[in-house]
Length: 270
Image (cartoon, rainbow, N blue to C red; front, side, top):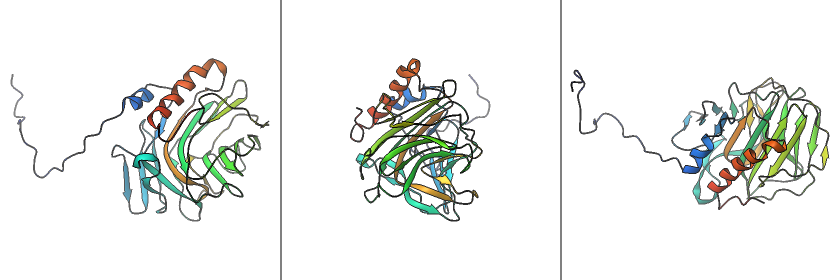
């Protein structure tokens, strides 16, 4: 059969750089089948670029995370030298945190983050954001750690756990989900099943006015970053879906279990 004038070359062209061949683990292929999850940021498979001080990480499902802070780097943080986005903690006065352009959290949602606290992290006295979406003082949503407890806040109200939930130089898979219809939120720390809040004061859906930030938050002016996570982020997942109620438990537990199974040397589910 003729293919016109298209040549067939049995060898590679010397002027074209060879491309790496990446193999996606079967567990990650199964994670891709959860269609309700529309954001997945993870630094590997050749999807990360550094251009000057700007770090760009292409997501698995179309969105891109980026920062112009040279102190936020790609390195390793999980066991076995697995790639992570390393965030130094503290603030950024004139540089932006790791944010996902055009991704907002409004209404029901699910979000999960797999990360490792730095060995030098201080687990008391400072707030560290796991994720934040919105404007400080507005109808934003944030999941953060303060004094070794976990907080999920919408606007002026929040749910909270009691300490002690974390240890330095240790990996965690933390998730939070909210159902706008029942005004109910759940969370888990290294657990596929929901844990019990110490106090439940959260009320009302979030209505984010700024892009999602992973491992930090924008300052009020939107010109810098604050409350940066002092640790290494392996993966972040989110979707506009309620996985908080009991009828969604099987889906949520299957998703969390798939993530944990990919990192048996880091995560053991309760």
